[in-house]
Length: 487
Ligand SMILES: Cc1cc2nc3c(=O)[nH]c(=O)nc-3n(C[C@H](O)[C@H](O)[C@H](O)COP(=O)(O)OP(=O)(O)OC[C@H]3O[C@@H](n4cnc5c(N)ncnc54)[C@H](O)[C@@H]3O)c2cc1C
Image (cartoon, rainbow, N blue to C red; front, side):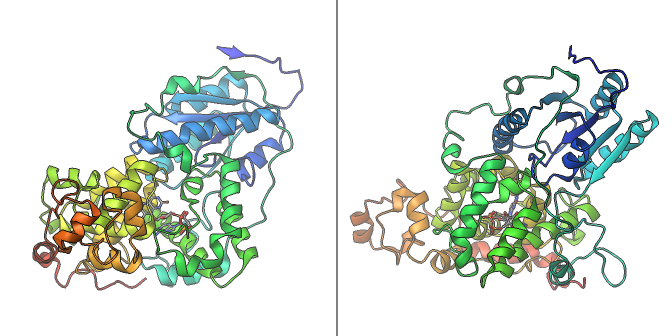
């Protein structure tokens, strides 16, 4: 059903702006281009054909972000149309029905999006519709950076040496002052999508930690630049401290442009500016890898890892997911993830390493869990990071590096503050045993009110034995990976 505003004879044909991972009005090149041409039909499609549709936490975020986007658009006089289905069918039909002259989007780099957009471009062209796609989500697009021999990068350092000095291209564009929507379909109600089904024990607390939407992203950037940025290089590895920007979900959903973040951090300067920009560089590197190796989410980047005999242990996987492994730093991380939809980067590495190496579970099992539970779940970052920890990825950690969860905890959470926060049953233990409660004297456990095996589990694997088992399983890789490759 259409809500029609009669188009005057001789008035320009409208354009169509298709929002995807760019849920913002400021510094949105596709929107700026579309809006400059006159009336613009503003569209978001819940793509039901995407094999990597957002998981539960992602849908929680998306729902709220769309509410905010809709509100901002309406405040400028426009209207956001929401439709669910196959964009390959929806966009051509809309263009025909509403006499659309041009379609605008910011490019995405996931394999499904690349294939879909390429095909859609051709279909729309046949129908006489111009397509203008723009770079809006990365510092530099994946095909623009090449090694000396002309191929894609496989190693981060040379990639960063090429990317860092370039930085983002062009100037930041303000949000349009006004948005004029032409005749448009009524669209669907966001509530009917049931994006977040509200499992009673889950996501209830996310709202305390996060403010999805463009304003929330900007406020978070300002908070970071004025606060944690000053100590980023020193504190970014300490999970008990809010020492990082927590911008990852905002960047994933494109509620703020990476160009805006880059510019704000560069302007803030300070001793740690470069360290922060490097992390943005890792984000681009993951996108670069995904674009050039579209199998990254499902296949070992180093196929020698196909030889590893992973264990199938549902009980071990469930203990890891539920934060009940008996290793406090791992359990704290997994509980932070469950309760807030986010986990500190250092702890992500520890938890991922524990699942892959101590429990010998295929990295894809962990990747799937993170996909469902992270508010910043991002196909490029998640897949590249899991493969990095496994050792199967590009420029990855060597397969034989096995984090000791006790020493990692002691090094990065020396007072045990992070563990105390997320594993409250251990909160009264002394710092010298909090990362290995099984070594505490019975009197110390009694004083802290901890009955091991009852209030808190004993370790589900012994570190030394698990390490030996992993090295044994990885013996098939000897000489084949983990020694680094040239970029
Ligand atoms: C197993 C594992 C899975 C991960 N899955 C994701 C994911 O799905 N989505 C995601 O955005 N990040 C992922 N990361 C990377 C990293 O943990 C998060 O980006 C970071 O913790 C987000 O917090 P922040 O915004 O405070 O980061 P900051 O330290 O403030 O960094 C700024 C930004 O740089 C980017 N960034 C930082 N570290 C990395 C990195 N190692 N790789 C790529 N980009 C990075 C993020 O966009 C981040 O917002 C994963 C890491 C691991 C080890």
